[in-house]
Length: 275
Image (cartoon, rainbow, N blue to C red; front, top):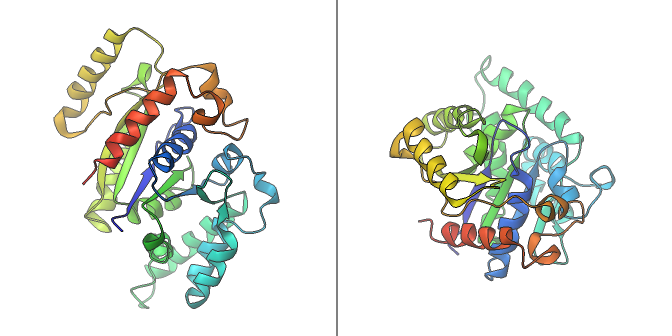
């Protein structure tokens, strides 16, 4: 199975990150791909957006990261208990506030690895990659929704990923957290994961005439050169897109005729073409 792991990341909030993870996952699932979504944010927005209450989840990504650190030999057992098989056919590893505790544990681990000569394989930045090694064969696509804080969690996601998608509000291109993400990706590529690539910049909350899209694309080229792909169709802003996570549904279930549904289908088609 030719599988790919994709992190969706931006250091700024309110750019449609979680909504894009849900709808990209749903679009890939409808293309008969086996999809796992991972909530890598202690706020649990992805978990809630798929219709689950974060605080009520007994097993989450936090349990898995801690198991990967302390009991790597028992990881398969913990994975079976943590993965939620949703009604839509998409699988989910949920998250809640306990993920912040796991992030703190990773930080302690990171500090100690620089102060001691130990097992070089147990590197704090590689824990999620170790975890996903147990899962990759079961899925075509693993998509990780990264939070805004806890940079070590985001670094873990990027170390485990083949690609990163950067969602950005179309109207605030230059300031919307792109430089921070690009810097983080560059750092991860140099230190931990040379195969990591930026799949593209995804323009979200697009609510204007087509010529704005053209000028936004031009400004991407001006600011970042030709180095970064911009996904073909921006995600149209509509109240339906904003409402669907609260309903615990993708746009394809909630409002299948909405223009944003076509945009997410187009995004999925481009993701399916990634090498």
